[in-house]
Length: 525
Image 1: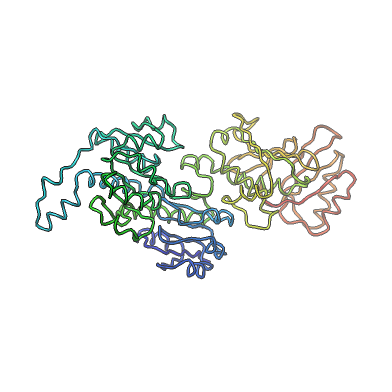
Image 2 (image 1 turned 180 degrees about the horizontal axis):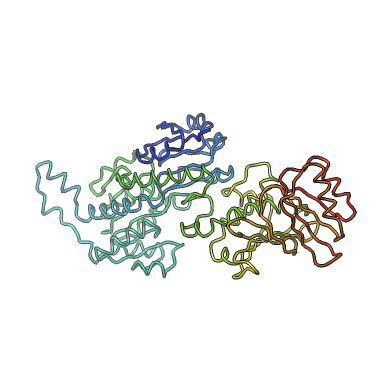
């Protein structure tokens, strides 16, 4: 059955056409949360922009929902935490509108500095107030950028072309990275005190709501100007209106508001403000880019692939994804194999990455290992999105270890556990493009990690393999391969039989009754 996608806000025709190649698409604009909750149960994917509120109730009602896509950068209208709990992937298009927002920001800065809107309005009304609209140049002025992410950095590059001095505040950007942009990192208070223009580029959330309040506005120069193309609510609009009315701030340009359309008419109508109706990302190029970005990600997720810009799952660059791609299937299958080994309750768990996988960000591999481990033992769906949260909810503490070289292999993933039955381990590697197990509990073996696998522990004894083969043969079960690991003749060891068919009921009990067999377990991966 073809997957179904619900689109609740305008999306470019290019994006819709791409989706319709492989899914059934319904466009239903203007749904409120209750209407959306009533409709969402029939859909596998939801695509929104900034107006649609994707609440916990909507996500709870999305019994088929696998991915929510925001055709833009922010996701403050989506309950990401609730989506994560339900294993629903949230993706966005963080790069699609970067240039559009940066250019709009520079446009608003120029509009404030040169009184462009006032000059346009006066001229159209027959006036010619040339002497009353003396502007100021950007050259030599200080631009303070609050938030030096993708958009903030794009603004910095453009402002540098105007020969502005650049300062920024961002707790997660190293000074060395900022220096490469020609930006000096300073505390927020120092930025507000120094800047002639302040431009905001932070996400809208509980931490940033009311960030620019009356006290911080009071730190700004009377001749300074404030620009917000980020999110409404970051600036205290009442405090801003008062600062402008009292002459403590020269001007403000706002593209976003706490309530949209804005509920602060005095602020919007002030001669000291330039206001636009959330237009920063509204260019033909940005809309098409964002639409195609989210369409491709939705299609990838619905096909069982990996999204390029996941919000609530490990995020990797395209280069890292290409490098780690072969190991994701190995990690999931290895976790599933280990989870089905008869090893008692896990008390301590360690994942180890050696060789090529250790050279990259292993967050996605960790999630894949957990998916394999937990999928068969928890009642809720487990995927790359919620695997970490599910493990944490069960009190599962996980240590990780990286090793530059993998013994005898170019790549190696390992699971080590202290269980109530003792120490257990399994090692895997991608061999000739296929996931293989190459070690169990210290025994070296090598077999493909697929299909039905009969794992037994035994005391080495002549004829044990023959007797097991006889039991399987009598039941019509074919053996595709045999792998045995042992320390020496007559010692304890492990044996893995690849089977073409599942083992009929009662057959395992006959095998466990053999004198030399300690355990026998059927594993399917």
